[in-house]
Length: 62
Image 1 (cartoon, helix red, strand yellow):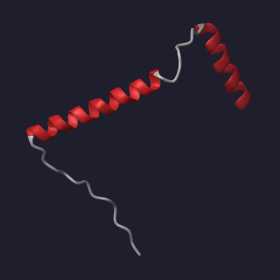
Image 2 (cartoon, helix red, strand yellow; image 1 turned 120 degrees about the horizontal axis):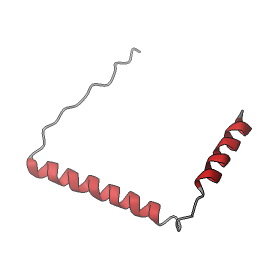
Image 3 (cartoon, one colour; image 1 turned 180 degrees about the vertical axis):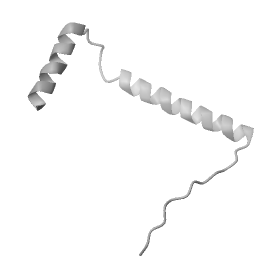
Image 4 (tube, one colour; image 1 turned 180 degrees about the horizontal axis):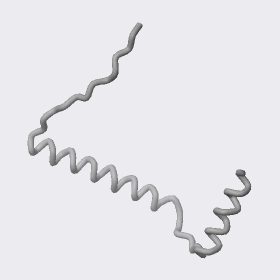
């Protein structure tokens, strides 16, 4: 059976629907940010030490 590529669906939204969609997207972003912030307290990072650690990981991977 031959498959056909998916086609793009274009729809028109009323100004009210666009505003509702923006509000939903903003709420989604706020929730994602809050979830990330709730994962723990910030940790102080020494930039030079952080870079050394990244380089060591890269060397270990080969």
